[in-house]
Length: 400
Image (cartoon, rainbow, N blue to C red):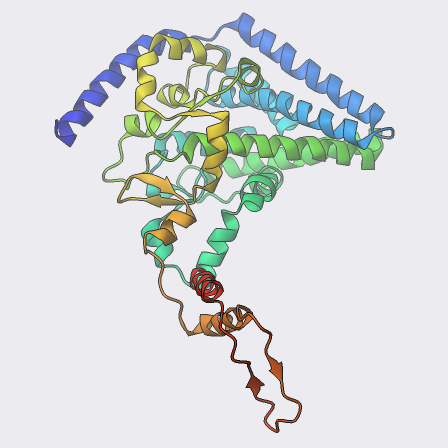
């Protein structure tokens, strides 16, 4: 079977799947109401408990912040659904519910919603991977970077920045700014600034009503944990090894939806806390299916899972090392794989001092300056150099 025939067969089967799951896109008001109640009430309750116990035990508050971050994820999923024009039938109710959720999540409802729609309609399209997505370079793009460019990209993709510092920046700062210049986003900027003013007013009012230091520390802790969880899930959903990334002229929506989004296989409790968003391939296939119907939708077309990447919790930790998109093999690869394949370029003169320094440090016996020597030249004894150490030193210098 050639590639075009295979693609046609795939598209045919996926269109059948779309027809089957269409019945699940109808909102259920009872389920929506229950989700609102069992998300907001526990969140507020745990928040109050954190406030009352702050002076007695920091570590208890820290553990409670993780729990409350998951309740905040659940609240955000409601916002997310409302942004997809689902969750409840009434358009006005969706806007009110979504906006209220955004005041809890700290993520602007309308502006983020528009960027998220853009992500869905361009998921995996390499030309616009910087909008609503995690910036990912191809192997060729990384090869062509300067040393400074490689350093910046490696720093951005490092564990600390990608999963800790980056998420906090994204939720607390990035979402406040109208950075997207694509057509259609300009008209959302006024709404974004209005949201910023309202959110700042709400935070200021709560600072006056409560102990402001305690409030900021507690809420900041919850938002930080929430941001880490949210970005981790988004990363696993779209940065898995056999993802789908293509240039516009070859990009296919159905492939992007099913192959470009993973199925993160979680325990039932974690699925509950995260609003079934781990069933991400079904969500991308039909974003108007409410989160509380995603599992039923998948169960109706279980055969579709063979076309996506199923990832367990333990497997997901290995994905954190995925850094580059290899167009030749159609998969995400690690920096280690990149350098192993011989893709690295030999160091330029700039690396020579580093190479000499590491080479010298690899010598088994220390070198010294002869105090009697007029030119202070370096004298080394005749002991054998540890060849293995030198080899490792050169390898490190080349990679740097």
